[in-house]
Image 1 (cartoon, helix red, strand yellow):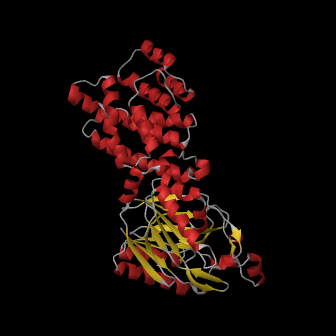
Image 2: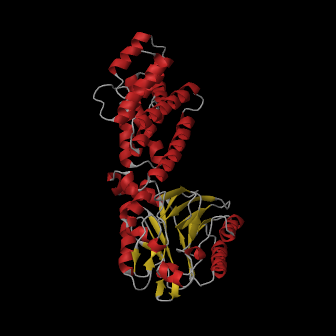
Image 3: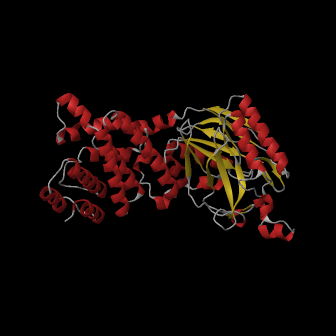
Length: 450
């Protein structure tokens, strides 16, 4: 993909800033760009340099600098994305009353080539320091760090100050991002060389491209530095800007991030605890999207075999229900559900190569069939290892070593008891010897009695 960073100098006039932004987009389109990233607060002067009480003393309310999502300025950016068929990542000071309470956010949107809003990310951590009185103006994100699907790969957004929090970029990487976009407002007075190394190390440790778009120009007591940059998953600077109002263009192959992770996967050793990485809502949405892709892949693998597709669909559904009922973490749920979709994938190869679908053959052959699919969809390495283990043991009922394993076995029994026509005595034997979870037992009793 061809990425453009629109490094902009802002004036006091919002309409002038909007026209400048549209001009940057036109130039990017002329140069065959496919995505444009903008700096922080691209339509306004950098008003957070002033404490809010100071502005109120001058009769200026913070809403004066804000836009709503429905405003003409936002719509004109969306129209331009549709007109030139390009992804755009603008950053606005947004007034949002959707919760019934008026709140203000430092927000970046991802606008797709149809002009639709694919999603948005708000600044998560709000800090106050000299010239950055951001606690006076911004509410913290209610969604955590966000990652979005594009036709090039998954793209995360981390806003300005959040990049200093190591978990921000790591959260995006754990959600499958190959590229992290950062709208920023760095000044000449800040330690720019350290900021640069900070981003290079983050890109290297998390195997992601990082693109940071900065403001430029002097605004009262602040002089913004420019020097926007793009960093490879190997931590190398592959494009950098000077301090002028300019476009910085760069060709990226996002598959390099996956290859980097395959060879140096530090994050595979990270347990993605939602409390640390702020991915409760975004992570759940991302997991659902990835599971749908996995379901589609396995349905294609089993194409023409409705019995097999219906079987793993039911096992997946029951696994999901039991997992929710037992309060699994999002990582455990994701692992369990992926294993449920894939658990019987060895059957076709067993039947083809050995003329049998015996349980040991399923367990032996399943992991080898599942592995290429999991790699294609870029499942995390540690999660992939556990999924393959569950596939290779789903008919082994001793030494069950985790909630995901236990639930997969119970869900498979709930389906097999019916599909195999087991009598009541055999069903009750399974209930007494296999079922351990309260949710699974309840579902059994609802289906088969006591």
